[in-house]
Amino acid sequence: MLSHTVPKKLLEHFAYDDRVTRSKRLWRYEKERSPYGMAAPKSATRWPGHFADPSNSTKELEIERRLKQEFEDPVNAFIDLFRYETFAFTSTHIRLLTGYITMLFHRSRARREASPGQHERLIGSLQSLRGDDERLSRLIAKQTLDLIPQGLRRLVTKEEIIAGIDSTIREHSSPDAPQRRYLETMEHMMGFVDEHMLRGEWRMLRSAPDHPFVIGDAPVVTWERTPEGLMFGMGFARSDVEVFFPVFPTVCLHILPTVSRTRAVHVPSTDDVNRAEAAFATQYCFTNIGSMTLDAVLQPYFGTVRLGREGFNLDHLDHAGKLFELLMQQRPPQGTIVE
Image 1 (tube, rainbow, N blue to C red):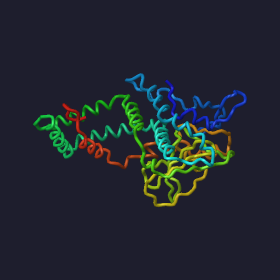
Image 2: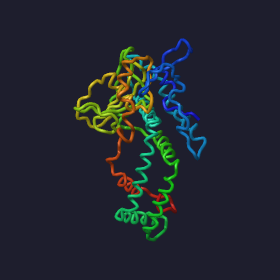
Image 3: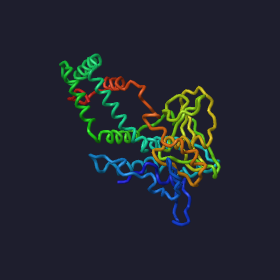
Image 4: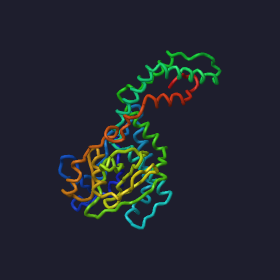
């Protein structure tokens, strides 16, 4: 099955009407290639097996259906109004857009390609925990206390804890584990509400038709403005983070999440937003005109922000410590020692 990472309707906003094919087409921009003017919105960001679950043949269709019904359709009911300067956000608009933008970020190829790195950190954290006697001792005490409400009064052994960790490592060591983890993340994020965005300040940027915004194959981008310049790929809860989402060649959402702010917020240029779109893109950016000037703006930035590496990097966190905290807070199902 071919999965959609950017909705067709959204891409159609950036398309032009081609007189030859009598259909909508996109100008496609790509690293070290000349702009191509015949990309079809229907297939421009459609990829085989993006949401495929090796153990569940119906999962891909289920995720596509939920994305459309729960996130795309409610926003599509009003998104065309963004073209009018008289449009004003309501709390309902912001609530629906928060979920829509969250899913746009996570459904991208860029986010999916970050899953193997997350998977490696999980395995590393489990291996680190396995050799940490102090944390193992605390887990033993915690798991022993968890048995009491079940009517079991015995001491959980170190061997049982390690066996549970080893079982989890084996479970997550299969070749399809990163893909399964990505799908679990997708389903989890469908129920997640980003309170920082929901309660943030929502603005609109506008650009001239001959100087359009582009939309990348990872449309939701972030930056922090520093004295040295723009730092792309900051987390949504990071101090001074700004979030951008182009919705038309002439309109881009500019969201200021409710985080601590130490610097004044400036109105960004269209070129700055387009550079960020290119930086986050896995492969393509799209818009409704062909322009060598625009191509020159995009080319140096294509693919320079890979999620989990240059952007949204989590290497500074104590992943083993966070895993340990989760295990200490978790109450295992009856009859088990450790998940």
